Length: 151
Image (tube, rainbow, N blue to C red):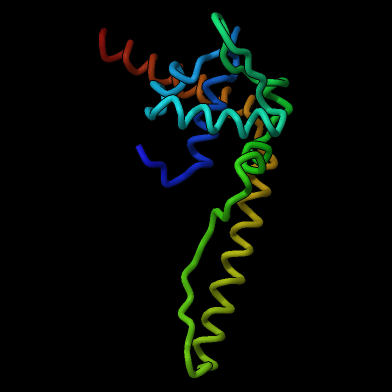
C-alpha cells in the first residue's frame, strides 16, 4: 500500500499504541494499517528519533509510547515525520508576468499558508490521549447500536 498521507499513517500507528499494556510489533501494527511491516518500522524509527516511542528488540519486544499519551500532541507526531505541507495549491507561472496571474497566485498562496497555520494549531491542541478517548466513545456507540439491532 502506497500512502498518500504519511501523517495519517503515523497518527494511525501512534493511536494503536495508546493504552497498550506492552509493546506492539511492527507486524501487529502492519495488520491494522494495513501495510508492510517495513513501512511501520520506518514510521516508528521517526517516532523514536523524536522521543515519542521506545522500542525493544527480541522476544517480547516491540514499540510503545515513550511518554504519557496526554503529553504527546498530534503536532509532535507531525513534526516527527518532517512537517510536510498539509495544504498545497498549484499556481500557474505566467511567462509574461501577467499581473492578474500574480494576484491569483498570491491569493492562493496566502490562503494555503493560513490554512496550514490553522491546521497546525489544531494539531497542537489535540493529544493522542484525546484521540484515544474519541475512539473509545466511537466504539461504545457502535457496540450499543449493534446490541440494539440484535434485540
